[in-house]
Image 1 (tube, rainbow, N blue to C red):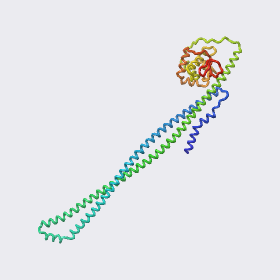
Image 2: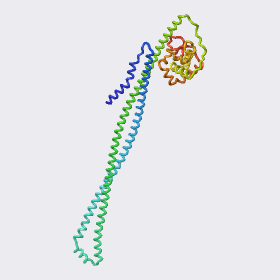
Image 3: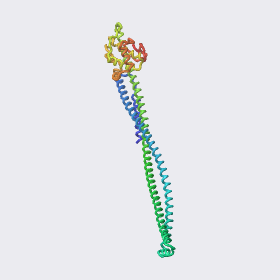
Image 4: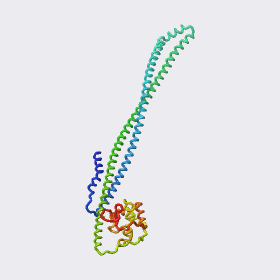
Length: 393
């Protein structure tokens, strides 16, 4: 099941590359519809790429959490191992003490047995003699003092035996009680040891599971990185495809314009148009629109190229052949490809780059760097002023 899941992930990571080779096909002629469809495909791919990147970020967070969990578990296992070592040493100490007490108990029992036997002999001796012997001892005594001394002796023997017996019994009971206490403590330590070993086994099982989860997450990270890279490659080629379509469309439009110019040249020539002085006070909207168009057409060009694109727009505003406002020139049908493709609207909504805004302000302020009305990607087929990748004419 796990292998099937990994294979599915590999297939999901590989599909953008497969789609890439299926979709990238450059036709011999491009239309605005194809350019629009390509832009929509790029937008969709960028959205999917963003989602894939978010999944990758989430996986990295999971991996960081699991790595921290592994460190915590290793710390717990080290503490448990240290605790088990301490318990084992304490158990060995208790067992040694128990052995010593058992030896003392054996000696005490032997001593008690010897004392008991000695006491039995003395008691038997005293009672076997009976009252007659005591009476004879009385009459044989030279004085009452001798008899009393004998009686005290007998009493002291009995008292000594009772005292010694009590002491040995007390000692034996203390030894037994101590041994029982030690055995109970040893059993408690053994129970603690079993508990520590069980916790150790549980921690090891959790550690193994977390390590497995981390390994699986790292595998998913690798797949997600491949997926993001595949999206990046497809987006790059789709953008190249879009650029090629726009180039083909511009070439077709340029060819049509040139054919129209040739037809116009066959008609009686009119005096060349002289552009009047620039008389426009650019508004904030004019600046924003002109900057957005400059970024779309020359965002990757030098600052000189950006000024040139802005100059073409303002030259058209001055010309009688084009609308007399910045908005009218930019939105004139069929003039600027980014306007038709929707890219202009995107840049306008988010705001153009700083250099493009500065170029727009300079041009609107009167810094027109050339008098051309047209520009296009330089393919070497048109004579004009070449600035960067564009030719102006």
